[in-house]
Image (cartoon, rainbow, N blue to C red; front, side, top):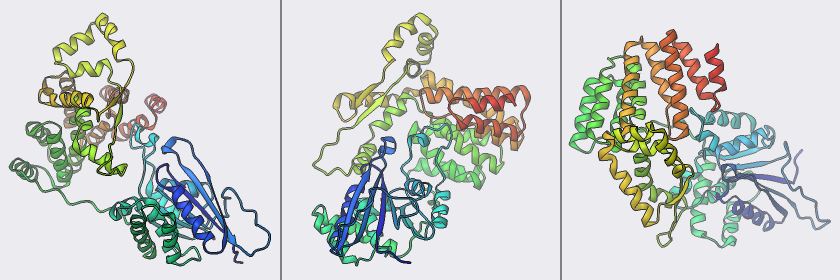
Length: 478
């Protein structure tokens, strides 16, 4: 039995134009003889504020004014439009998407939650599982990267979503009626129509993003880069080439060519086992590019970062963007940036450390677009030429050599698991200290008991499972 009532739920994040999209849908219904009502239920601040917009419409027959619902009801939603893949997943979990009724239209790009970014390991939710569920639980699923589509069109994601809604054919309105709703809005009409056309074409094609294709390996543009590439091809197995090339690029950017050469020296010492060198090429590059205060300052003041931020907020050429960072360097991190002898002296002197610690107890809001802070961070970033003399450099190189010695002495299966223990070491501040402590506990246990590969893997995954360390304690006790 068909019904003439149409229910639409739009799930979006703050700043993505979900309200504009809902207004267009309301305008579309009202202009085509439907009694239409739109409501919104704001979310909490997590993920910048996820909001559910709900539109319900029914043909205006001129009789009594119908009573329309204020919120979507599980099992009773005809169309769900999600501005991000995880929002599509949330719609499925909440029961808004059903096999017999719902057309699900969703962007496949991700905006990662804080919990995903701050996880000890890879905390990302599985996008593949959400796409599978979307296909299985909806009447029809249309998914593609709408954020990328909006950037290509020079528009905003809300217009691409509106175009996808039109292209899906889930509403009884012609394309021209959708376009008229955009024109009636009167804002950025030409840009929104471009975005609309992009979304419409993608939805008409029934597009569902395929698995990402690995990009081709970069070709070096300097003599030094070409020499490194020739060395990688000559001395490392093919399985390791992609990570080794990226590792060299990363470390030349992080420090210099001599540091990148040290990276290859270390890899070559590990032998010729392809799977082991592939993992080592990845994890050694990550460890050697540890995040000290010099690195953080360097990344904060790069032209590419300011350009990226301006692009993300879609600032016009004549608009000024002010960028404020929250920075909280601890005394330990400041001392680790000093010459090794001086840093050791301060940290080893209890009385001096006690007097200095209050100066670094609180974080600071730093406006990197102001000349004062930009110059200060630029000076700190410029200290990378003296990085080899810092306490942190001395400490990290000693840790890396100790780790590589363990890997070199182990059997291949055990060596790979030891290499992957580097996943515990990431970030800076408390995150780094916690990960390093967990890494040390695993290595101490390995040295004491000679753990098999499966045990190393199980304990490592337990350490990555939670910040409190409860799972690690249980695994070590087992």
